[in-house]
Image (cartoon, rainbow, N blue to C red; front, side):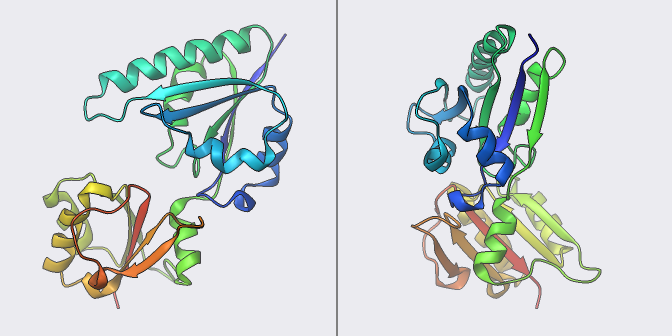
Length: 229
């Protein structure tokens, strides 16, 4: 039997932002895979919860959130073995991924391990960047402007270099890197042009100008939109 692995983007948080295709695949799934950070609940599974079938085979991949890459790689290796076993037996697997699977998505690491041996279909989802702009009621770019998407994990020099030439930028993976980001934006006189959104489209969403935020740490699921005035 030929089985398929579906990498399904479930969007940024609001279940109603899942696509019709994502809803259909999730609601009909017999086997669902997802990541759990440090053994905690899965954010992707929580987003898809309203559409989960009454019964399914779960494949929970416990992902250690550490700086070292080896523990995460080992977790992906083990999880992919379990997914491959289901596919080999002829069972389709739906892998849930927050946002879009190929936009800084965890599914890309599953894809690179399994796509050469199995059928894989990627189902795109709404990204945190586009969701943030919509919730802020602020266009990202217009006409010939260029949008830069920058992970806040970049070092300070790289962030400074990229932001110094950006007409518009979206910073993701902010979390504990907020102090560094704020210092760079301040040095470039861009603080007043920046807005942060925490947990976009979720019930605990917060939108604030950067000039109103104290401290050096924000939640990991924070996006900062910068647009030169």
